[in-house]
Length: 636
Ligand code: SF4
Image (spheres, rainbow, N blue to C red):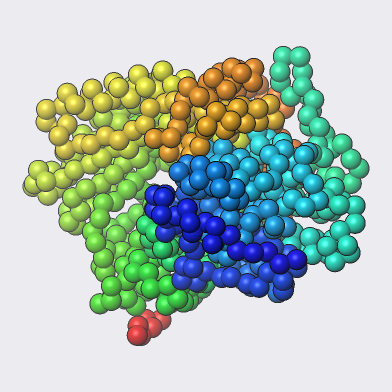
């Protein structure tokens, strides 16, 4: 059955809303396929505004891979701003895709990519606007399968009642596998309706279907067990790992945004995974092991993507880009290739000890000498041992001094506040470190024209990390420590004016903590917040801590129990039936090591220390060097 474009109805609303361009679609490299020729149709959503959602790599990769499949189409949808939401409700215009402005409810699958839990209320808005029942249990055969992916999907329990399914890990192969399951089921005449389709997905072992699992609780509120309620459903659902990134060189044709977005560059992922072992870092833990993309594939992807998009900045993306075994060759090869053109390079995430200034010089050869950002994360040596961020003060000062002497004038240092075992002195250590950075910079350059900004985020313990058992610091403690740090910097007559400080208060971290380590009972809080008008919780101007606390009261949920409570070793955690490959005993030991300031090396360069991922997932570390060079292709 054909589906009509909603654009004529939407167009009438656009003159009345802010930034209407974000809703019109038609970006360079976007795709519109014939509806009737497709047998499986995906709507892909990044549940935030277009300006944040469009650059998302995960969505762009899946959009391209799915659209390359025969008889399959994929379109994108983003969260609409409250002004358009109000008009859509008034005029009865449902949630639409930006590609062909088709109603989201007409698709077979609505795939949502969650990098953060703060997008949950936006999911509810989209479902409601689409006319899809909020609860999975209320959906019928005509509703899409609502499927979550992304890092937050490693504990989807707080949104379990709203989801039909979730997938863990890399999406490339599993998205194709799901497409084939849906196609086959539809070709057979959709036997058994929605329930059978979900059962087929669950039986495949690669898709988590929350409704097929029951959760029992102890009288004190802890989980007693999570168990399948049907035969054929696996006890544990495993994550997916793409082992050869060279086989998946996406995006090949990056989307070029029509409206302003948070990143306007072509990003090429140079490797996936990280085994540095920073204990706070969920991304590092759940994406193990390290798999590098080869220098030749990186070179080819950059060339093809720049040609296809016209972007004049290329970002080399990963969790710690300077750790690529051939980053020097990659940087030099690309800088040579684009010398004299207006194409510049950037390295979005770097580690202090892996960074060297030759590399920084390559990156700035063709572009601006913008600020350098380093992330020591902890303000004292002791704190950095607890979090296993093996950066010494010496490393930091040496690197930053070299940067200042090579002409950089501004460095940014990123830290966290509220880390396990943290004391006031650890946070005040940030001020000492910043002072030493400025002092060393002034001595090395003979100039007072050096600056440093310390940027501080609140720490949130995350599932599948050694800190999953830790007590989160309450927001009063975080705010008190941040204030003391601010006072220390302000009161410093010699260095204070050269040091800037950026931070958020501790309240949003508590809500993020509730959503990160929550269980199914937290779903009622999310729904109550949404019903009370909660939207765009990742945006400070929209976020309301009070609204979350009121909703928790209403739902009878004790926020402190989920956030500031330390868990015992044997407590069943809401995500224990979801397998990121990490051995639970290893994680617990690493948590004990953290408390005792014991550091763990990176298994890329030392023997395997049995975190469990490789044997469980049938994977292995894949790093170079390949010894290959990038050809300095002629740029036309
Ligand atoms: S199993 Fe061993 S080699 Fe693989 S990621 Fe874990 S520690 Fe590293």
